[in-house]
Length: 153
Image 1: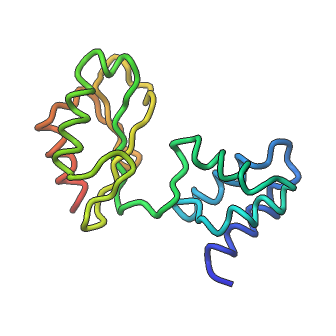
Image 2 (image 1 turned 180 degrees about the horizontal axis):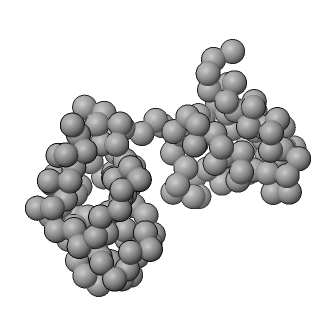
Image 3 (image 1 turned 45 degrees about the vertical axis):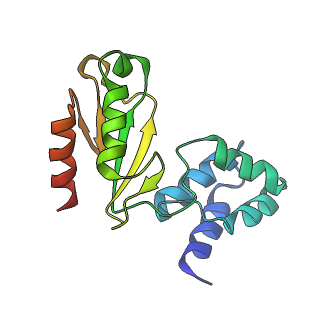
C-alpha cells in the first residue's frame, strides 16, 4: 500500500461516520497529500456508498480541490469583486503571462502553481494574493514579480 492509499484509508476511517463525510474526507486527503488522487475517488465512493460520479463531481466542482500535486509554492490571486474593482483582472493577466501558466497550472520547473480564489478577506487592500500562508495586499505587477521571485528561493 503506497502513502496516498494509507492517507485516504485513514481519512475514511476517521471521518466516514460524520454527517456529510465526503467534504471532510476530501479536505483531509488534500491537506495531507496536497491533492486528491484520481485513484482515491472509487475508494471514497465505495466507503460512503456513493457513485464515483458523485465524488468526482464534488472534486471537480470546488476549485479548492486539486487533482494533481501542486508546485512547491501555491500562489492564489483573489478574483472577488472588491479586488476586481481595484485591478485584479490586470494582475491576473500579468500573473499568467509572468508564470507562463493558466489557473490550476504549475510552472515547468514545478516551483509555482497559480490558482484563483474567491475572497481572501482582505478587501480593503486589494488586489490581494496569498503565497503559501502569507497574505499580500495592494499587489501591483511589479510587486507580484518580486513576491514570486522571493517565494521561489
